[in-house]
Image (cartoon, rainbow, N blue to C red; front, side):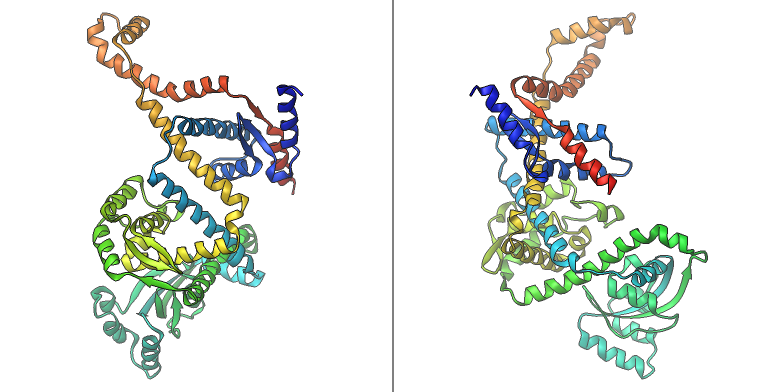
Length: 468
C-alpha cells in the first residue's frame, strides 16, 4: 500500500467515526473533531450580532486550523508554556469540570412548572421598594423577629441591627427599589410575594438571614398573555438560574460538612496581607457576563502579590494541599463581586470550588470529551497568542526597505524628500509588516503541512439541528 493510499484510507476511517468523534480537519498529524469545532463555534455564535451561516462555519474552521498551526509551532520550537500558563490551563479545566458538575448534578434536577414560570414573569414586570434587617445566624434573626411580633417597630430595630452602618441605621434598613432578578431565589420570591407594608419571617440567603419589609411597589400596567408567551423562554432561563444558585449553595453546604477542610491561619493571613488592596475597582454589570472577570492587568497584579509565597500551603481539602499559587489561580474564575467583598468570602469560594473539582473527578467528569475539547482549545489559544507575539516582535525593517517603500509611494508626497518622510514611512512600513507577519507565516506553513477539511460534516450537523 502506498503512502498516498494509506492517507486516503485514514481520512475515510476518521470521517466515518461517530458524530461527535468525526474529524472535520486533519492538519499534518493533528486532528480537529466535530466536538472541537462545536466548542469553538459556540463561543463565536453566542456573541451579540453574530449569526450562524455556512460562511461563518467555514471561517471558524479555518481560524481553528490556523490556531493549531501556530500552537504546534510553539511546541516544535521548544517554546513550551511556562508554569503560569500551565496553571492557567489547569484552572480553566477545573472551571469546565465545575460547569459539567452543575449541569449534570444540579441543573438536571430542576423542574419548572408553567405556573411558577408565569408567576416569575409577573415578578420581572415589577419593582419592589424593600427594607431589611440582616443577621449572620438564624438565632439572631429569630430573636429579633420575635420582637417584631410583639409590636417593636421595624425602623427602630434597624437602628440597633445596623449600628455599624450609619446609612442603613438611619433609613430603617432601606435597600431602595429592586428588581426580582437582583435578589437570590428565596429572597426574591419572599420580597415579591409579600403585600405592601408586610414583614417576612427570617429568610436564608448565601450571606446570612434577612427579615424583609416591602414598603412600596411599581408594576408594568400593560401585561398581556402574548407578552408572556414571547418572554416565557427567557423567564424560564432566569428562574432555572435562580433555583440552580439556591440548590448549588445547599449542595455545597452539605458537601463541605462531609469533607475534611483544614485552614492554615498564619499562611492565610500572610496571603491576605500580600493581596490586600490589589483589586480596587467597583464591581459592574459587565463582570456578570464575562467568563474571566479579571483583566490581564488585575491577574498580573495578583500574581505579583504572591510571587514570594507561591508554594506556601494555605489550606488542605480532603488531604490535598492548596498553595498560594493554587489560590491565586482559582481567584481568576471567581465572580468579581466575591473578590471585592473581602478575603473571607474569597477563601470560602476557593475552597468550595476545590470541593466540586474533587467530586467531579470522582464522578468521572474529567474524562468527558467536552472537558478535553474546551481545555485543549483554551491551551491552543494561549499558545497561539504567544506565537503571534513572537512573530510580531521579530519584525524588523532596514533603511533599504524604507527607501524602496518611499520610491513606491513618493508620488503621494510631492516635493518631500526621503529624509523628511523617513520616520513616518518607517513606522508605516513596520506596522504593515507586523500585520502581515502572522498570515504570511501561516501561509508558508500550510505549504509544508498537508491539510484536509470536511466542512460537510459540520454543515450536516448544524443543518439537522436547525430542522428540529
